[in-house]
Length: 110
Image (cartoon, rainbow, N blue to C red; front, top):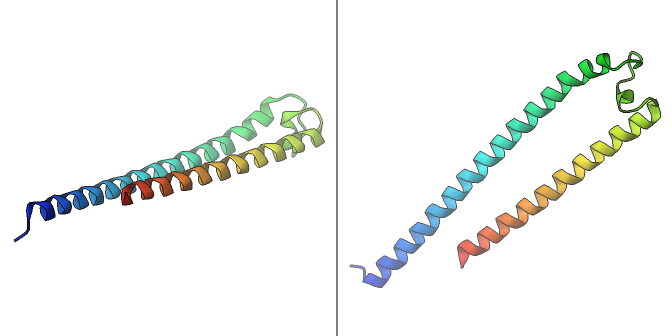
């Protein structure tokens, strides 16, 4: 037979385990929703960009990056900067997510 202290300790351990499982499910759900939303955004932009280039007057055929400026060179620079900023933001997001997970794991072990 277990003592009351052992039962309480087992109950707390089980509650902590259930919290970890719940957090893992939530993290997986959030990650899956984020992936679906990002793919939907990419597809929407892929569909919208050609229509935008046709709608803008004076944009020659095949100069997609120049929709941001009258100059083709400046348009390519803008596209490169946007891609760089996207990469930086995704990297920062992933690092913060990793730190948050580590903090949660430390909290669980306390």
